[in-house]
Length: 307
Ligand SMILES: NC(=O)c1ccc[n+]([C@@H]2O[C@H](COP(=O)([O-])OP(=O)(O)OC[C@H]3O[C@@H](n4cnc5c(N)ncnc54)[C@H](OP(=O)(O)O)[C@@H]3O)[C@@H](O)[C@H]2O)c1
Image (spheres, rainbow, N blue to C red):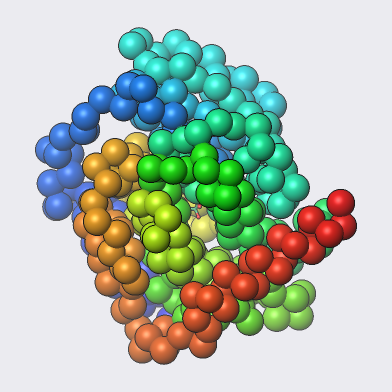
């Protein structure tokens, strides 16, 4: 297990760290056109990549709705967003995005959007359940954003919009497999759950592509609180090589403003559609896109039927 992890991190370090960002010339690429007049919603916006994304979109003129669960952090973010010179209007909404109910009420509360960035995600080391009874990382990184996006689509609030799912290079370690989603305590492994959720996000972009400009991307390895908590060795060993949150946010901002053609079965990284498989173990999916959507629909329905 340790040697497999070591091989994975050694293989991708040149590309996923700051080195790849610099080698691909991204600092020299244009920030892109003004987003004035657009409405963007960013989930998990009180820290890390989501925070950089929300502030970056506002700096380019978008009206930003930043969603998080911590009132104090939201207040600090709103103050910073509103202080930006020539920035667009900056709003915050408090929700626990691991809850289907909170995601559905969020969809009701907001109006039409030009961009939805499904950024929130986590890697809990131990199995935990949400108050709705789902495993925490599945609920946060997949089920909640499925509920939010489907509700917005059904309400016509994403007509003509872009949806960007923030996945991870960790998905290279898991096939598409519904039996790895919402793992029970006796089968729980945080890295496996994380990889499986992120793999499923890729399937969702393919599912939504008929209705919106849909993309799944990964940000590389970025210096954030999430990484310090889940992978503390990264800070210790390659801290200076980690990307900044703004560098991690770059491709999401580019995708939702540039709107390249959807690339089925591919994952976006550093402004290009890249292959979704590096290992044989993931090439033959054990579930289909339709299976994943059916599971997520059934889990959303469980919550709706309870209330
Ligand atoms: N950093 C990386 O190297 C990396 C690599 C690959 C993929 N990603 C992906 O990129 C995304 C962002 O990662 P990050 O490293 O920026 O994460 P992070 O530092 O942990 O920040 C996540 C943000 O989401 C918020 N959040 C977490 N759970 C929430 C919930 N249930 N409801 C509302 N807000 C919630 C957190 O707020 P609190 O402060 O309240 O917890 C925090 O503001 C994730 O999907 C992650 O998997 C990151």
